[in-house]
Length: 312
Image (cartoon, rainbow, N blue to C red; front, side):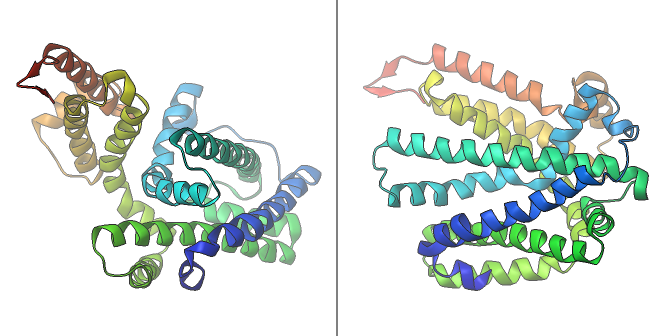
């Protein structure tokens, strides 16, 4: 990862033309074999996925663990830079090309995850429910391909994690180098070493430790992304951002602390009984909507200019 991240100018060729196609081919082998010799039939879902509504909410919460939305805020820097290097110069052209890339990525990811989810559902009959997805994939690969399955899975994991690691290291190094001019390559080394030592704790430990932090960060991240899409509807006024993020911060702090098993006394009871969707981990939604509405009203009331300066 360190070696491949040192020269970001070659990333598109390395990842786009070599790593990603190889990864997709390896995954397709696993998917195709799961149809030829199925592991079993899908079993009854556990309580967290018992109904369509509950499963959809749980899917969002599980999505927090991927950290994709958080990473996207930094990954966007790289994507835009690559698009501009490819010839797009105007904002409309950049938006168009990024949208195309995003559509292709979403299509490929959707295809992969749908069929990998099928393998997971079928695998319960073969070896029961596992703590994380890692043993599900490893055991499924071994059953489907025997010893060769370990090699195929190793290739899949190596390529998937390598692509992600390179992207994260590169984007973080680029971003932090803009904040602190330490030098791009030095930042690459720093983030590679930090990531290496964190990875030594293992997937389960990392997820367990990260969940409270993610439950705090994600509502804020989602709110920022929504505001970015609605930016033009409120003329990008700071008051809308401030009110929305300010109110979203309240349930984010509460949920993060509760997930970390900190007792908040009466506050816990108030959120449990009075905040919609809080029991599902989505209590921030009503706060975000309320913040946006208040911010929009604030914008409308204080939209007049004073001394030639428009109110924030």
